[in-house]
Length: 92
Length: 136
Image 1 (cartoon, rainbow over the protein chains, first blue to last red):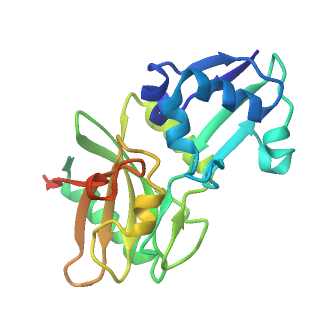
Image 2 (cartoon, each protein chain N blue to C red):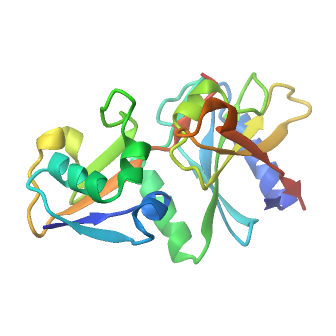
């Protein structure tokens, strides 16, 4: 079980809570467990092709998982996962 | 949302200072009234794109939370186009409950500020809804 911090923007999709305690040995497994319980989260974070949107940032204990092992980054009982969708856009 | 004139002026000043690139930041407030503008660094440094540094984003969001405010809006500038969400703005709108405020400098003598609710998960015809910005 690891702790997942839910930013305000995703809280409505998980019943309003700030944190979830989730099973899973890797970041990818943790995300899948959240999607299974709260399908609206998948809708917000995953592209139509089924990939995690590249503008969604993930941290384990404040470390960017892109610098670790991405979705295969292991998470343990004492680890905190943070999901942080980017604030981005522009005239294009 | 209600936007005090001093903050509106600050948004335009930020957009102007960051030319030729787009500026970006967040607005905290209470009960729909803006109280503070948080300027952020556009990590893209581009006239066509903005990305707020994720760590700065986290820090500002925490600051707004700690101050008992709500994140009322994410803002950015359009340097040459109207204050209306582009396709990129819609594709990257992860914050459907937060307003996306756009400062347009297309007419430098008459900057335009408009705000929208944008949801990337809704069908295109429903994805953008304008919310009035009242300068007070």
